[in-house]
Amino acid sequence: MHHLWYKEIDGKYIKILPEEIEEMLTPVGLAHWIMGDGYYNRGIVKICTDNFTQEEVLKLIKVLDNKFEIKSSINRRKNANGNIVWRIRVRKLSMEKLIKLVIPYFIPEMLYKLGIKK
Image (cartoon, rainbow, N blue to C red):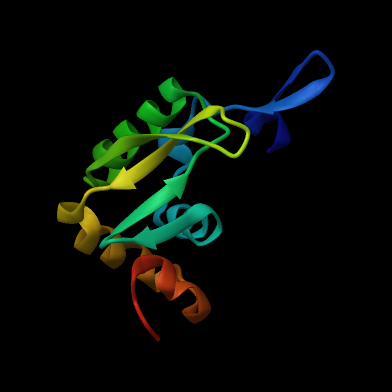
C-alpha cells in the first residue's frame, strides 16, 4: 500500500493520491477516513486533506460525488506555518446521505465527528 500512497522525491516520501482512488474508496474506508481526519463543525463534516494538492482534493470531491452522490466543496485555509492547504467540506444537503453511508462502520466513541452525541 505504501507505494500507492507515497512517492519518493529528493529522499523524502511525499503523500500522493492514488490513481485508483475511486475504485479503492469504500463506505468502510470513508468511515475510517472521517474518524481519523474528519471533524464536525456548524452542521457539516470537514475532512483534513492538508497534505494533498488542490488538484488532488478536487479529484477526491469528484469521487465522493460520482461514487456516493455526496456533494462537497473545497475549503482553502492557512496552516500554522502559513502555508495554503485544502480541505473537503461536505455540504449540508449531503450530510444525511453521508451519515447513513458511514454510520454502520463508526465506533461509538467517534460519532461526535458526525455531529451525533452518544
